[in-house]
Image (cartoon, rainbow, N blue to C red; front, side, top):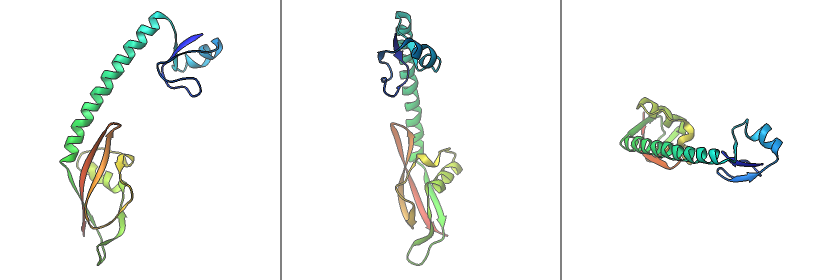
Length: 147
């Protein structure tokens, strides 16, 4: 039986491919889990329409992410921390701390979206990346100052 894959299926194929599978596998697994459609002219047309709708949705999400990224780039965050004589922090500023600072500014982000290679352990000015969309990153200026 020929099916059109709606999602990537391991060891079977990629999204959008037409593959031949056993009838039972298609009817009992792929189709009920919405991983595939039977390969008919009507379903091919429906799949093409789904691709167009998804492309429009992704482009809209990307545009919205670019707007948010431009707003984020205008933000300057200040982390007030305790530090020793040689500007070393007692502790560190982590992605979780930066996410909390962004939340205070009105940007809801997950700490996993903060692109910080390692925790910040010294006073100074840093540029921190924030992943807004898989294709859009923003740079936020972070001031780490003494309490």
